[in-house]
Image 1 (tube, rainbow, N blue to C red):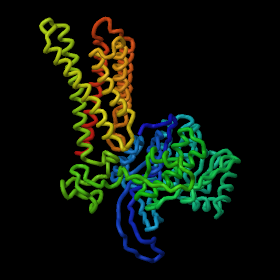
Image 2 (tube, rainbow, N blue to C red):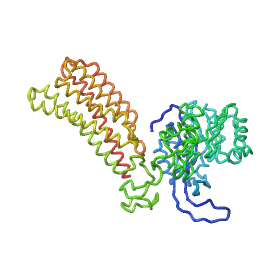
Image 3 (cartoon, helix red, strand yellow):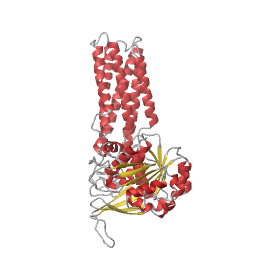
Image 4 (cartoon, helix red, strand yellow):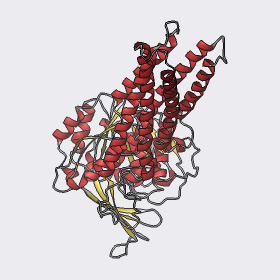
Length: 554
């Protein structure tokens, strides 16, 4: 997902290996109950909140610490779009959490912070050197050096936000004046103020943060907030909860992504509540986090509306099918060997449309189809140039027919491949801009052929010019879609620098066609720009297809 805001979110937070067991009810003291199922997920408040913010469009970096067995958490963070270069995996013991989830969605959690408590002050200071004044720094209470980290971030002019979870004695000496924002749930608010009523707890906390923002989340009842003297409330949304683990983290990440994007407090509260409600409808913490599109669609609905969530993307959790051979994995867990091909089952690296192995195979085939169309275009223009420059071909009907045939075929194959490729890499059912542009390209080709046949005399040249400009614009729209292909998977996307170069080349081509007067003969320079754009895109598609196949085999 492409970031939507220049403001970055810098997360100093925990990474936990979440071992989740489902029970009929949370056991009472001294009671032993049998689990209905058990699973392992990527988790930790810091990791969950970083992933949630990134999935909602924020530019996110994270500082964390774990062991070798935490690598799958880092992979899940990367898949969500988080910059993980500051995460170290050299600790002897990773943080872990044991989570019990009851049939009604309620949970009880025991954490062992381990590596998270060995993040040092120097590491935090070096990490914050990469932040700019006005950026957001996010902390939780699951890591060491909380007070020192907050002080260092505030000294750099960052907007410091704290999710004071879990609430413990360390928060007694908290310097509230250094915080731009504080997020707590009802239990944490009571622990910090002694007030059981959330509204009164909010007032007590707001009195200590006269210049900041205080938010008290109320679970299914939404959230209330204080910003100076102003008070706000959002009643949340109604869902059929499956698992409430990670809902608070989803709220924090989506809320801060909205704040980073310049949203006002009411819009940010709606986004946070939408994310928390959507997360409650899936199992796990990080695997349950919603995307920006899901959050935006839910946040505009009226408070108290019932939400229904689409099928899960699966990123970071156990894949439904083996990503190497497609074998159904309902009875297997991450770390097992696939019964069909023997490969170790890793956390899901493909989500959305990419989760379908057949779709990935088709994407590779359609990338080669596009490359074939680009090769035909290159051959057609090259043959035309040869016919012009070499007297042996000049005026021969066979060369003319071959050139025309190659050019016509290329302009049918290329837009067809564009439509298929955009459909392969998107979960949207509505027509995308790139698809509409590809269909417009076919229409432009038909008009060009009709113009060459004399149907539009005396305006044939102007119509031809407009149609070629339409073809170039279609290429530009597909460049925009090319930037999005691979989203929803752990595959490395096309580098932004090459996307920018492609867009510039398409713009140059459009400029040449707009200024071309056709009086000097065939506009070969403009044709060569179209060829260059198509060949450049073909190379990028084949490289992306190669990365998809490599990720399957890894």
